[in-house]
Image (tube, rainbow, N blue to C red; front, side, top):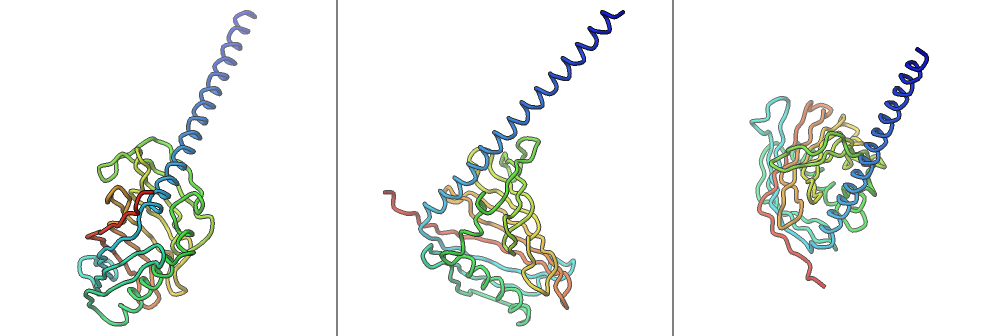
Length: 242
């Protein structure tokens, strides 16, 4: 009986040791995969920065009030020109809706985007580990927009209206951004509540470029406001290879 008891105890210890070892292996694998993914994300962002000499794109903005997301209360289409040395400039192609909505929504958005993309400012909003704590979510790759993607939990290293607390999805093969979604880490205005944000990206000329964006918040006196942006007709200029 004593021998059987000792054998059972030994087996229990061995099983516990095996489980601990398997857990350690899984943790190391998770950490290794996470480090690889973060390096890949940073490399993809850096490649985009170093390769693109500028671009133009048409951006269509729409503002919806309350739960009605079929009939916009205001719309605007602009042609955006981006140059790394000067940032963004805009030419209005069309606009409609109440002037107060245009000023509060479109005016603020374009002004904010222009400021964010000035040389010396834009580095602080890059989707890279310099600006975000990143943790690879468990579960492996998932299908998103027809692509195998990795989900990464992101938390800004500082609070800013353009930095998101949420999830970043990247292509599992090349780590290019596919989607980002979450809450703005800081309200863009004293008159607006927490802002839900989402932006989708597609491969354009080998780089992740925004195709659709959405932001929803409750604004003082106006209630629930949703702003969508659709990007089209990209014209990308690449740097001459050295």
